[in-house]
Length: 187
Image 1: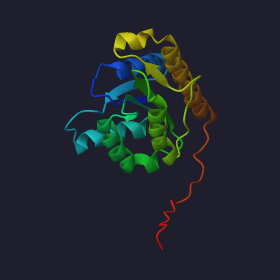
Image 2 (image 1 turned 180 degrees about the vertical axis):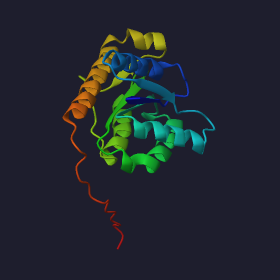
Image 3 (image 1 turned 30 degrees about the vertical axis):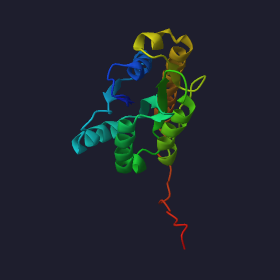
Image 4 (image 1 turned 135 degrees about the horizontal axis):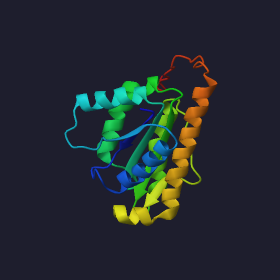
């Protein structure tokens, strides 16, 4: 699989899934394989995190989607992502990342920023679109009516496909990295 899409909503086929599906379908039109995996399940196990970790490490791109809950991403997905990135974050360097946010009305920008931090701390280039990667609606049907949001999802997918193909065609070896320095500010 080329791109892994993580659905961070407990509503497995809800608004976030609708946005991620638009991205997935466009990635596939661009010739890349993609899979959506739901991570916001109550009672997920270490094996669930390990399975997603394996998929993420095999993929060239990772897209995290979440609904907005109190101007933040879903708590279940936060916990899953914290476990996932503590396990694989140091191995995701130079893989492409993007976040997708669905909201009824507000809080999208803060959630978008929150999710993108998983990528920046893992040295993952963030793929953009023509606006922040967000859709609006209270139901999947309303999200489909957000023509600007859905266009943003398609452009995001095409940009990610282009970057993945460009890196593959360049066939450059991964550059040298430095060991992480951790500073304690309490002396």
